[in-house]
Length: 304
Image 1 (tube, helix red, strand yellow):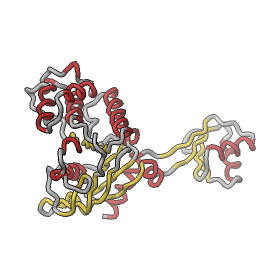
Image 2: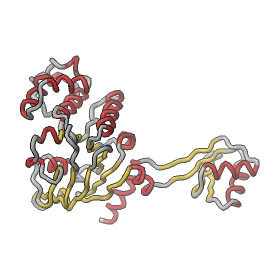
Image 3: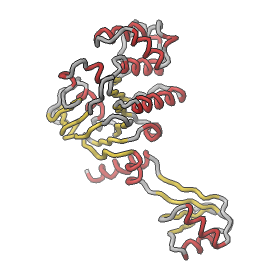
Image 4: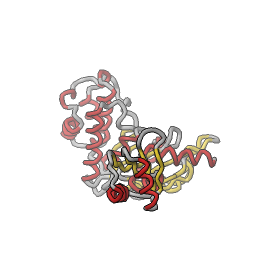
């Protein structure tokens, strides 16, 4: 693997007639972290990835690898590997033959084929035709195709589609391992829970424009709310004690619960102990990445 260059969008624009799919989009994807590319359907994610790979020509701006368009980069397969559509394999070719053809095209050593087959768990299926593969196996073959050149940058568009729970965990671990090796990893997914478990950094787009470019934890913290849930048989006593302590506490609509905002579990626990109130539950609750994403995009829709 060569030293990893930066993947960068410079005021990137793509128009199809009157439709603007990507609208002056600028961001950089750096090595050593897993970057999630997030946006609703039609946000311009796939179009942006295609421009990075030279498959679509920008209307304006540029998509570069180390400051150059990929087509101007020597040995591009050794620089960037990508999976945009795992179904883009000739159905009559075996997995090994498919990868061997890719390796020849990229002037990659032949023994790399068996290495990536084992890496993605397709060694036993190497001589099977791709047309007989399940969707999950095709996803694994697509990932193997992206890795044939041992690239410093990997781009995956919806790599988790069709994978079973074990396969999703494997793909998550693979992306993290690639980043830990110092590679640049950019992946898109509509599976918010998996994005939250896998990504270190987020690039969020909506209607072709950049909404956020920040660490995942910062994005969630900025666009979600948190509260403490307490449950007790002495709800009225707890409410009184919390309010006297200056905490914003309200009874739950149903059951013996109390919701506290502006305080931590430690705060609530101390107040309850001082008041002699028994707690059956004390939980810190924070909205998820999905909540943050939907809140942000809903706000943008309202403003449009």
